[in-house]
Length: 311
Image (cartoon, rainbow, N blue to C red):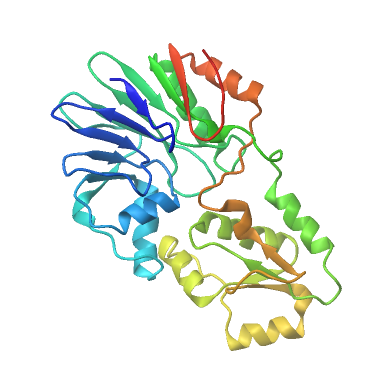
């Protein structure tokens, strides 16, 4: 089973039997046939665009990601999904895609819910597909676990997303950025947060770390409902007439979620740090090469926007 990497989109496909194609994280303009199989490994605008189109192909999504999308549909943040064409792959269990091909998904971390890495197996070969990932995020132990699983699988070919390569600036703790933001606020200032509904784990992070800085982050009612749908045993602080009055009376004890455009000096634009199609990649070239060295595949093939050579 040989991968085909599109020279323009950098996306990966495989030609299977009977003119069937296996797509890995296809672009939104992909021409999908009814008998094709599509595997998504992370949240992206391409994936959302494809899910908004009438589907003929069989689509596989990670468990966590499918759950999030279902909640977003319920909140009317995205259009309804055609569920009869969507399946989810469980974690750590092999799923047969065809009589000749199976896939095992491993939880990963790219800053969003649902990121996975995949082991694809045929009778004669084993292939690892990294999706995209960061090594110092909140779920860095997930990276260690799938890296170990890949190492033990004796991989013939490792497909590596070059977006794991640090391309802008070194990884910096959001907790440090947040503490710095609060320290630089003018006295009696009531700050606002621009948050993303696509990253509820990040919203939980900002709730907890705002509290560590002595403030309560009040959420928009719809976002509080979304978090409650994902975590029904927790009550989340909401913006109401009562809480808004309290925040205006004691601004140094509160922060507000900003639902409009993030503008102004006292707005923490958290959504900028996790745009859907960008990850805060944290590995240098040498670190990424050492990562691959530990997995020890027979061959490594790079896809994605960055240029790297391993073999």
